[in-house]
Length: 114
Image (cartoon, rainbow, N blue to C red):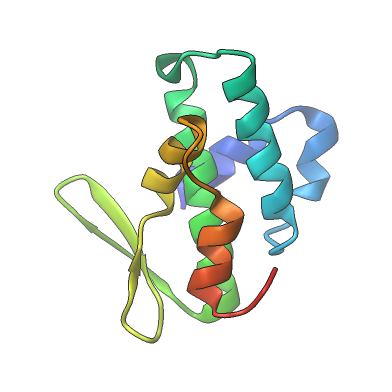
């Protein structure tokens, strides 16, 4: 997904090689979002980056499970082979609000620990 690639390009250069679409890379993504939240960065200032980081997490699920992207009316989900729908873009927004974790969402979607 284009948003995932844009998000990887937007993160600090030293962090980019660590965003390798592995399950472990989601720890780094959660920390990046937590740092933005702790710094008080307004949602409006990072909305695009958060959408991209959510898309990145969705791509991790897609690549690890054979899931596929679904969209309707501007909303985007990942549908895993077991038929469940996941909302990584919304989860990124919840992370910024202090109420979510892309790592945990992906762990649940992949059905195994990260």
